[in-house]
Amino acid sequence: MFGTSYANRASAYARVSTETSVESATPHKLILMLYDGALLSLRTAAAAMRNKDIPTKGAAISKAIDIITNGLKVSLDLEAGGEIAGRLDALYEYMAERLLYANLHNNEAALDEVCGLLGSIREAWEGIANQVTP
Image 1 (cartoon, rainbow, N blue to C red):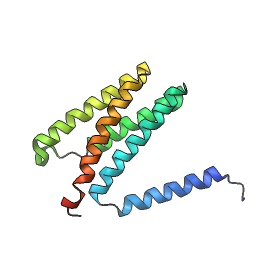
Image 2 (cartoon, rainbow, N blue to C red):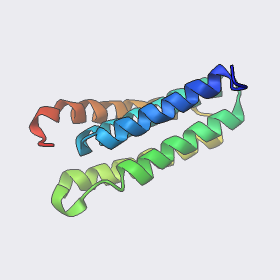
Image 3 (tube, one colour):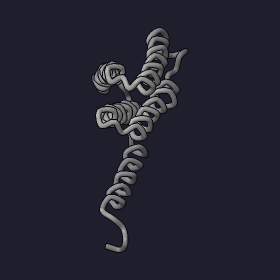
């Protein structure tokens, strides 16, 4: 219909939906969205690794690293967050290193490790939602 494929329309809808979600989200919700995006990228990378789809694997891992280093890590307030922020900063750095290793060595165990770490932190972050004022 009108020369566009279903995939293109679905992709456009997803972009608009995501943009709307971001615009209306609280800072707490934005961090949850970053965790979700990184986890989705890691699941995509794991599937691509199993299918020997090197370009998709590399792109997905790069996206996860970008979310971790330029989203989650940058959002830390090291002064106000004290020891917890400092530990998260170091943990995010470790995750990025593990993902580089996973990419270079096709190591799914390293992907799983980072998924587990991110999943645990995401769960804890979601758990404090009622303690955060918008």
